[in-house]
Length: 305
Image (cartoon, rainbow, N blue to C red; front, side):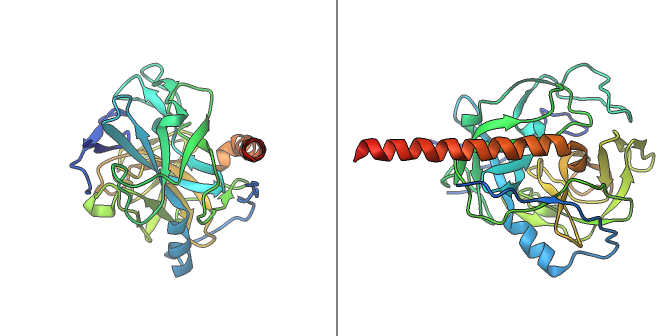
């Protein structure tokens, strides 16, 4: 059956704006990642960061109920069975044009309705991902995110998976924020400037321009208190992908929205340190689910003997 791959990324055209593409072709949980260091990175990313960062970024594919379309996002593996991504990648949109102010409030009501059925969310790894033909390495079992139905200042979510993934686990910096001038490595399946959705690309020279709450008159970015802006990155398909501290390798943000793929500025991330309590809850939930799954499989194997 033919399948079309789309990418989710809300921006000037809204949450529902998707780029329709031609098909790209034929545990036990170890809590990792609550890094507490603070980076004053002012230099481009170290080579090891570029290599290691890419190994921990996964593709998050959500299949439509008709089964013929897949929406592709990105995410960071932050524990063997836990992925950090964007809220708009896991919940259904009510509006195509979310409007926010610098206080993180919506100007046009709620933006989201119910969550997507976790069973429709699949995880893929590799340099190039083709959801229409590749086999997923795991599926979502639960989604965790802020309670608000507004995306402003809260576009972050965790996916608890049905099994651990054998990939690089990326640490999150949960105890200190980024600062203007810091260098980050955005990574995602947006294919870089060419915007080849499904191809994983890291940008090694992105700089943080603005920290919310703020409105950047030059770029047009409006940032809530839990958001920051980078000068480049974020193409369609990069939604939910991480911004990684260029000096320490820690995840500091999640792609939320932005201008065009080639625009300078107005690429907005949700800060992960602003959601440290949600992250702690996600780690505990992922550990419990992993233990439950191991116990269930042990029972099933015993019955088969």
